[in-house]
Length: 173
Image 1 (cartoon, rainbow, N blue to C red):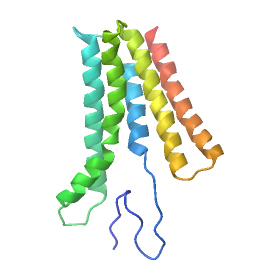
Image 2 (image 1 turned 30 degrees about the vertical axis):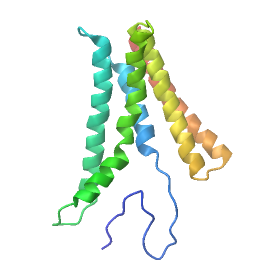
Image 3 (image 1 turned 90 degrees about the vertical axis):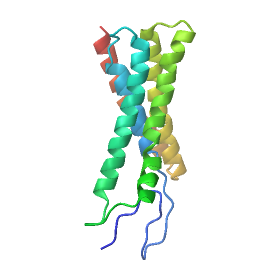
């Protein structure tokens, strides 16, 4: 029985090897960050710091969950997973955490520019949605998708982002 291969590697066997792109973690992490910004309330003594920490910790927790799920779902029965594979999967999924850093930076830097937390939150949400659209379009483009497919993938991510924006708007009133 063949073991499933990691997404970074080309398929093995009689089929010709083909290159793949994978921006899944970046798109998913951006969607996650947008959701956190949209639903986080400004409560507590240090709401700006708490939101930055919440974004980063949520990214880390979901990264760890994805690493675990990939490793638990792709293993030989009765054999330990080699550390080299754990490291490879952890690196592959790290873009989930990276996607939280720009929205977190937008929240943190809002204070430097004298912006209130609500305004910083809207900017962070815009950054997260822009990342979703950008990463999905880049992934499609690098995969050789047609211009129409690239636009379609960008629009799908924009719609997902706008749903989150609408949720934030509804929760803010």
